Image (cartoon, rainbow, N blue to C red; front, side):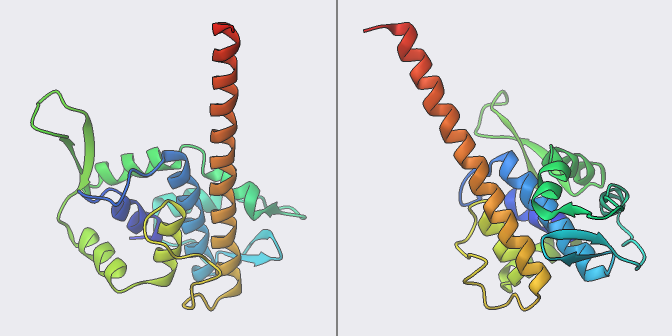
Length: 201
């Protein structure tokens, strides 16, 4: 299992701390992929750029897809641009992959058979591994989860991140999520102003 899959499982536990936005989660998943690729030596970080490395790709289909999509020509891709490009609808991709692997099951919320449908982790070794990693306070998982509102760690407050490249990535994830929230708030304000305009004095 990858950090991204562990993160997804943590966010869909039966009683999450709060609903996680799919856009936020997609950005965090892209960051988690990048962290794993850094750890495997498949990429390096040069300043704010993602540079392809020389090590073999990890044995994970989605991480393989991430590597295949790397920009391989200088000046390479900025981390922020990678997060937005790779992160587009990435939460849906992970949900489908985990369902296919039997790691997630669909359930109805509430007592009604017609209630809203949600997914929950199946009790598998992968779920237990993700839970163990979370309960042990894994610093990378904690800081990525905090980006989507689970826990309260910040990249500049997390003492366990001793890799500069990883710190750069998780800080970029937090910045991207805040930017996405700013866009949402701006749209809400614009929509309210438009509605008021049509409503008239």
